[in-house]
Amino acid sequence: MKTNAIGEIISGRVTEISQNDGIAENLILTINDDLKAIIPLTDMPEADNRSGQKAIRHLARKYMNRTLIGVIVSQDPLVLSHQEAIKNQTEKLNLTVGDEITAKVIWASKGRAGLEYKGIPLILNADDYGWLKHIDLRTTLNRGNKLKVEVIDVTEEEICVSHKKYAYNPWPKYLEKYNPRNQYLAKVKNVINQGVIVSLEPGLDILCSPLPFFEVKIHDEVAIEIVDINPAAGKMKGLVTAQASR
Image 1 (cartoon, rainbow, N blue to C red):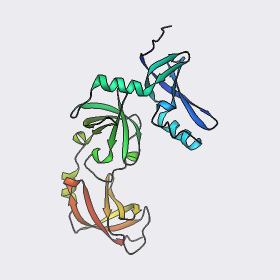
Image 2 (image 1 turned 180 degrees about the vertical axis):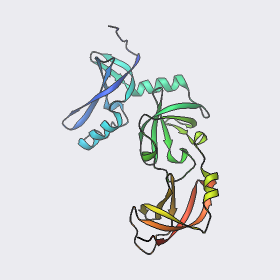
Image 3 (image 1 turned 90 degrees about the vertical axis):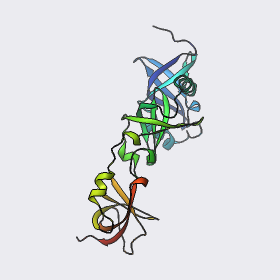
Image 4 (image 1 turned 30 degrees about the vertical axis):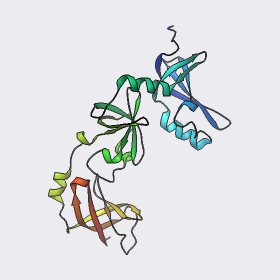
């Protein structure tokens, strides 16, 4: 069996998260089906958020079955440093603004998504995903998706990318289909302090403000008036005018 040397970068799949007294301790990686390696969670971004089952389950959602890279820092047991591997890869690849790459989706929240390119973590903000505001990346992206992106910002803390350049631009279709001051049937997606977010069609959510004088709930059908269409800002504005007939 090949012996890996100190300082070598290797990769493995996360198959276990160990804990002690309710505090997550290590990510256990399986390498080539039989070799086990440890990445201490003190070496991960969640170093200060490892206590309790809620935190441990979050770690499972984020890391379980992911392939991670690490620099070998100890051989018996086999211990890896993920952060050192990322640093080495970042310096080696030297991504710069304007670089176009294909990255893999690792996780997604409403407003941000984590991508990965050759072991390097990337950040995709919702506003940089496409041509529309009010995008929920949780329902748009799935873990494992491959996405063509462009590097738009590089700092010591993170590398930000954009998918907008490669995304379909629906605004010519919307400008032809929807007209200001016309009334349209829409479905309520959310009610927030600023107003009501409604769906005009799949993928097209708009903010209607202010809140109507009558009560509306999620999934209600309502009539809305389009107040403004602004392709440059990636959004429309509307006004809820009536409850739809039932």
